[in-house]
Image 1 (tube, rainbow, N blue to C red):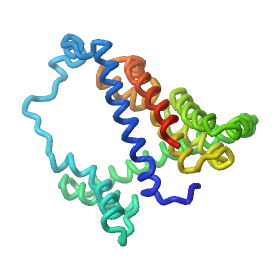
Image 2: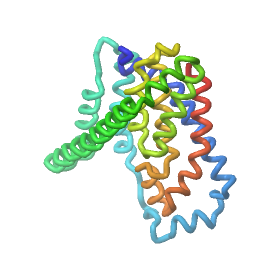
Image 3: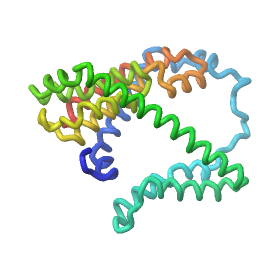
Image 4: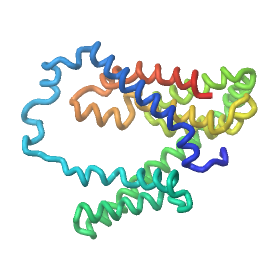
Amino acid sequence: MAHMSIMDLISYHGIYSLMIGVVGAVGLCIVCWVLGDNKGEKIAEANPASDAEPSNFKANPIKAFVPLIPIILMLVFTFWIPSVKMGVAQAMLIGTIVCLIVAMCDPQKFSKQFFKGMGDSYGSIMGIIIAAGVLAAGLTASGLIKGLIALMVQSKEIAQWGGSIGPFVLSVLMGSGDAGAMAFNSAVTPHAQEFGMQIHSLGSLAFLAGAAGRTASPIAGITILVAGLAKANPFDVAKRTFLPMVVAVILLAIFMR
């Protein structure tokens, strides 16, 4: 849409991604401290001795490093060896081969799990894309998008706030940062230049705000997973992440131009 390479887009929004990460981490620590989550009795309740990891457990540093290989490959070849084009698919495939060698597991079982993971990921991602497309088409057909664009054309500031708050609210309600951001980017972002913004700028703002909304949503898959690990209610988790994410989205709208 913006006619940019993936790595150029990552270079653009990287600093803003780090910003909301730092704001979220610091804000979450503050909220947890205010709510008294650092108290020993709460930790003991959430982690009874029977559920604790064995004292002799030792993490394998080599296996822990393997998931980072695709990212490292892409960064190295993009910034230091640009003559070699390293795409996401190639980096992931190399990382998979290294994983097979390091894990030293049965290749037959490995291949089954590999293709099972591909199928699960494809189904989940395609489901989100289809749902986002249907939502975007519905919003367009209802005239809401046309009215929103007309409002954004009046002011760049309105466009910035709409591009951050809109995907954030959608993602909180839907529990998916991808669905909310993709619905917004499919319907509104192509018109970015009409209200004085660049497509890559508004699009990045939308998907970062969507990611923040997903983090603040009590119905997001990751929130439910974390709540299960902590033996807590998903709403208790969202209660701690919501305010830091709101602050992060406000900062995005102010600084991401």
